[in-house]
Length: 478
Image (cartoon, rainbow, N blue to C red; front, top):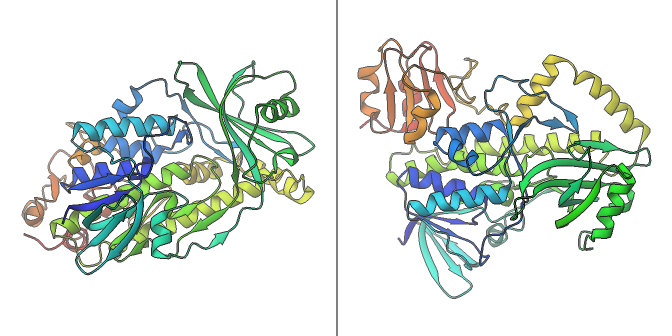
């Protein structure tokens, strides 16, 4: 084998996965067809669950130290969700994708891993022992596993012939990175009676340090074929239509048309090949769901591949990647479709849609509804199936970041191991055979007993015997 895992695609999903694999002690090659990393912002919002995951790896504070990344709140269909409306201590942050990619590249390079640029995958073949990847320049690489993180037009997905069912795009809007002038340039979503609308979000700074914003323009004038270029005049007209003279365009850095296509692969695993991020699911970029969902795919898969490479993975551990992440991706597609309808994405001003939005907006004012929507949009509503232990309210959910005195739970997860919280020191001998894979925290942990997977999800809690869960997720005892 040339390497344990080949990751195809060096975007946020591929970079996150590469970091997880290095933490698991797995040799990794990261390949990307582009000769250099894009300097365009693209995605810009980081949800609380992703921030928690970065904190679990000790990467959150260094990432936020890279610049001004203001805290904010989420929204559902343009309806604001108040800051602090859920249980989590980390609010949304505005961190452009380009910043995240640059940060991860530097972090991985410090560990000796650099993306192999200008490496375009041209073919792959797998057998019982591994995968052979062929590149357009004639080079070949042999690996145990291959992960496709190569985007919406995934070459790996095409080579596999993987079914990618869903809804084709029926409408487009304009997404642009802009510099603006105007007292209301921090507005979120604004609609006009004629069906035109605009959304504005902070997006960090351009290379000269000037504030950038993501501008999305929708409505009749912008429903053009995706291949039609977006001009500066179109952006100016769109701003004038929605805001009049209140907001003025100072500069256009980047613009493209995006569609409401919504697709998901039927299977996230194809033998020794796995699909993640946009290679597995595409949808409208509403509520910062795309990049975050891909990074969560990577966090779920990384430790499982590490277990398989090191030989201690339970028989069906790799299958749980599809079992857990396919439903999570499907839930994202459903919430984005609902948002698209309630936002009147196409600008139809259909009276039935407007009536539904009015009622939904009223409902969204209720604390219970706000809590549910905030959890949904923040990534915190995901609950993985944990056979035999689902009765406990924490099982399957992200572990709360409890302060245990000497350390927080997130800090305990930085080893990449599982964590067993054992406040009564009841399981010292029981857990000893798994000590190379699970770190036990004994007396002084002011909480109930809890077993946490390396990705931060609780897989057992409360009373009873943790041995079945230890075996289910961490293999045979040593």
